[in-house]
Amino acid sequence: MASFGFLLLLSFLAFCSAASFAFASNATLPYEEVEALKDIAKTLGKYDWDFSIDPCNKEGAGNWRTPAGPTYGTNVTCDCTYANNSVCHVTYITLIGQNLSGTLPPKLVNLTYLQTVNLAGNYLNGTIPKEWGIFSNLSSIFLQVNRLTGPIPIELANITTLELLDLGFNEFYGNLPPELGNLSKIEGLGLSSNNFTGELPTEFAKLTALKEFYINDNQFSGRIPDYIQNWISLEQMTMVGSGLSGPIPSRIFLPLENLTVLQISDLSGPDSTFPQLNETTSLRRLILRSCNINGTLPDYLINMSSLWILDLSFNKLSGPIPDSSENISSYIYLTGNLLTGPLPEPRSHRAMDLSYNNLTIESQAECRKTKTRNLFASSSTGNNSKPYFCVDTEGCSTTSKLTSILCISPNKLWWTPSFV
Ligand SMILES: *[C@@H]1O[C@H](CO)[C@@H](O)[C@H](O)[C@H]1NC(C)=O
Ligand SMILES: *[C@@H]1O[C@H](CO)[C@@H](O)[C@H](O)[C@H]1NC(C)=O
Ligand SMILES: *[C@@H]1O[C@H](CO)[C@@H](O)[C@H](O)[C@H]1NC(C)=O
Ligand SMILES: *[C@@H]1O[C@H](CO)[C@@H](O)[C@H](O)[C@H]1NC(C)=O
Ligand SMILES: *[C@@H]1O[C@H](CO)[C@@H](O)[C@H](O)[C@H]1NC(C)=O
Ligand SMILES: *[C@@H]1O[C@H](CO)[C@@H](O)[C@H](O)[C@H]1NC(C)=O
Ligand SMILES: *[C@@H]1O[C@H](CO)[C@@H](O)[C@H](O)[C@H]1NC(C)=O
Ligand SMILES: *[C@@H]1O[C@H](CO)[C@@H](O)[C@H](O)[C@H]1NC(C)=O
Ligand SMILES: *[C@@H]1O[C@H](CO)[C@@H](O)[C@H](O)[C@H]1NC(C)=O
Ligand SMILES: *[C@@H]1O[C@H](CO)[C@@H](O)[C@H](O)[C@H]1NC(C)=O
Ligand SMILES: *[C@@H]1O[C@H](CO)[C@@H](O)[C@H](O)[C@H]1NC(C)=O
Ligand SMILES: *[C@@H]1O[C@H](CO)[C@@H](O)[C@H](O)[C@H]1NC(C)=O
Image (cartoon, rainbow, N blue to C red; front, top):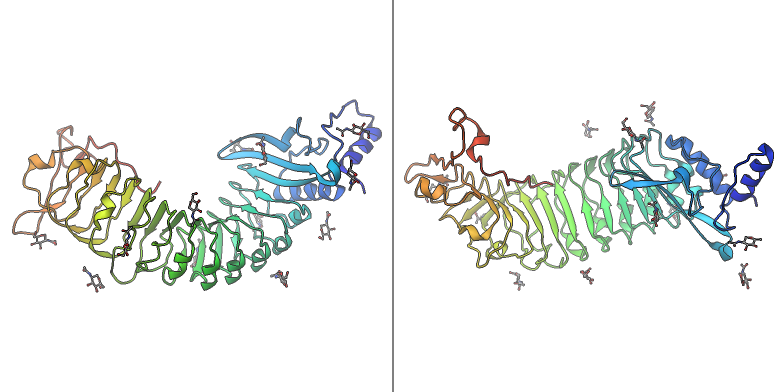
């Protein structure tokens, strides 16, 4: 069997090149994998891999491994411990942010030992090759931020070793194949910002290894499924503008002890009361924005010590805002509800948006009590229901006073967008 080292030797002899190759070991990459890499490069549009350098060489790797940042990087890595350290196989390919404008290579499967492929942040178009279904060692596929399209091929469901699949920020469409429910090892599924339609398949109830599930910005239909309560390892879930409708099943989060990020927004469907989150005590970020939630705010929320961002804007929450018993520092967004009663003590938050509610605010002086609250139109005056514009104009220039929304709270530059 020919090998990478053998090829190099041939070219050395043929061209009498003066170049010398410092091989770290005698282990070699099989000829089939070298040929596959050439084919893969052509399909992707990767033109600067230097095939005169052994990609498995741990040291001088040329363009096979370049310095990486969060949005770019090249890394081809081999495992050279096969057959008594005499044979290498490519196990890892990362080509992030390389301006690749080709398509996904079906020949990737000829790298039969491949565990990770990461082609995020390129301009790749076309569809996911059905051929990829025969991968038998692959654990991670990252294709986010490309121009890929088509439905998810049913064949992907045959890669039962898959743990991470990120297809976010592409132009994929169609229904999710129910067969994906067979990916029993899947821990991360990223489908955000595509054009997926249809309901979440009932077979997804079996995805009990899931830790992260992202379906923001899609065209799904149907209700948020009850079976999410089976995903007991879930740590992060975001369904911001997913197309799914409510109500949020009340008890689905009770078993999810490790949930730290829960973000849901823009649900259609009937009103319902606040879902039970009293057992998910590790929550750091809770966004239930425009979810048709009525009834009162649960007392335990304000005291969740790990909570950093709480956004319950644009619901139908009524009743008073519970006071915190201790100093916690979170950003709290309650704008656009029907909350009543007095202003809460400032200690329960770092910053609080209470605009567009129905609180009892007695005076302009109270509006100024703290600079960490946006109280614009947070109160209606006495017996008429006109909003009381609780506006802090300190620091506004005379000309812009009250004319610009930005000037309403010139000292409130702490405002952070809640969807970061
Ligand atoms: C490479 O092979 C040569 C001869 O076959 C041997 O002497 C040498 O120890 C080997 N080197 C390594 C790093 O295995
Ligand atoms: C890739 O594998 C397929 C079958 O698995 C085989 O037919 C083909 O010849 C291989 N191609 C290369 C370049 O090794
Ligand atoms: C390339 O990836 C391998 C496998 O994840 C890793 O061990 C190695 O540090 C990476 N090298 C570079 C230069 O990023
Ligand atoms: C691996 O090396 C050991 C000792 O060096 C030898 O006994 C064994 O037969 C070798 N195995 C293979 C597959 O070459
Ligand atoms: C990709 O294209 C951009 C803009 O032309 C350029 O700044 C960047 O260096 C390119 N990246 C690579 C890896 O070629
Ligand atoms: C990918 O984009 C290129 C250039 O824009 C275009 O020529 C090609 O037809 C596209 N391929 C697919 C499969 O969409
Ligand atoms: C998946 O694998 C099974 C058995 O390994 C096979 O019967 C089936 O045809 C494959 N399905 C697809 C869509 O490749
Ligand atoms: C998304 O799908 C809808 C309905 O199938 C279609 O009307 C729309 O054009 C698609 N949008 C994109 C960006 O592909
Ligand atoms: C929750 O996280 C802890 C610590 O990482 C871990 O030991 C535990 O198994 C996790 N629980 C579940 C249900 O996954
Ligand atoms: C959470 O609420 C449920 C139902 O109201 C209750 O059964 C459970 O004991 C509560 N758990 C905690 C930790 O308070
Ligand atoms: C919340 O809305 C539901 C459905 O419309 C209704 O049955 C329930 O009485 C409402 N609860 C409150 C507290 O308004
Ligand atoms: C605001 O609350 C007052 C009583 O505190 C009530 O009379 C009024 O109808 C409420 N306004 C709205 C818009 O809910």
